[in-house]
Image (cartoon, rainbow, N blue to C red; front, side, top):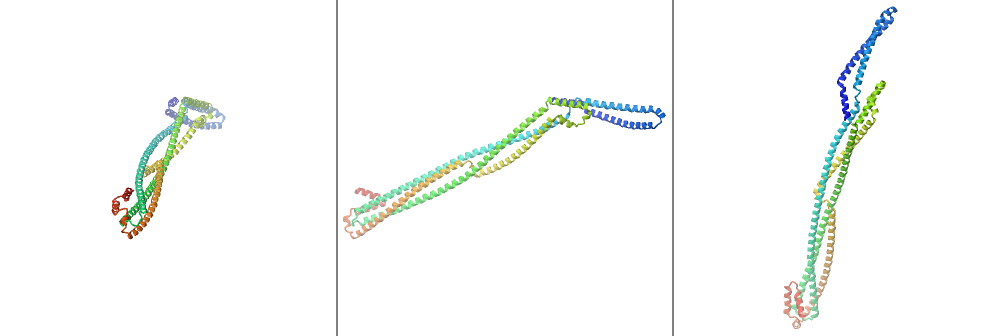
Length: 505
């Protein structure tokens, strides 16, 4: 900075405004004297030619006047030479201590250009920082959205668990009810079997043709009621089996539909999460590139500041001033070699400065190209992220926050499948049990038919020997009527018969 002040003070002492006027006046005076000298020399040349044509006696008379004219011309040339020397010395005196302005002006121009570039880069860095903060805010928003989706996932998992628990409880209640009905059917079948055995034993023990007709009618009526109850039990079992199968099919279909819907939502949410992770990775890459560009700008600014400080060091300007003084001394010693342009001389004496300027220009162009490329990439990525955010907002609104349900839905699907397999196994077991009940009912029906045939045979025999039946009957008619009334008023028609059999036993 001191060298700049010294140079400014030296150029201030030159007084270029007054010096310019002085130079103009001296140039005008020298030009006028030059014109007068030309006219005088032409006139002197004509006098000389006339003097040569004159005879010798006339030449002796005119020689003095001619010599005076030559002397006057010599005096004019001498005065003009003195004026020119004085002007040159004045110029030399004024510019003796003045440094060369070209390096200083060049450094100022470079510093101005670099300052403008630095201002633009600072503004661009501020803009990039704002964009970085904006992207960070968007990332925070995305993280908050992911957190909310996780909470929604937990809520949906809880709802699914509650639905599964309620369905399981309903299935358990239905299974208990069906088991209770099956137990009742088994008990009814056992009663029918016991009654059949009892009747078979009674027919085997008391098979003579002297049985009472009324007792046979009572037994036939009881057998008909047993057949009706067996038919009702069989129809009830078939109805329960059909109802259970229908409910199982409807519930299995509902579960499959729900599983398919959840799997589609899960696939869509998984794809959206993948896209979001890819865009987030792109944003992170862009952020790293922006930080790298910011570091590049900072290093470039630091390098420019160092070069500017190097240009402002006193030693460099002292060297330049010494070079200028040496070149001025060489110019005064050899005037014929001083016609080289000032720019060429400066380039020859300062190749390092020119190389530095070229390197700066090249680096500046590279940085500008890199900044343009990164700006374009940033704009492109920004457009893509905005498009992705709009798509995600639409899809999240339609799907209801089903992001991240893959493990939950997969586990629920496995649980549904396992539960469906268990229900199918239970249904198969119940089907086997119903098949066994049908077989038992068929055997009981066949046995009942045989019993009916025996009763008909007994009834036919009793029609021929009706008078002697009252004497040989082990049970009187009042007992038969009592058994008939008891079986009609009881829920279990074979219980009174069993009690009477126990009494006789």
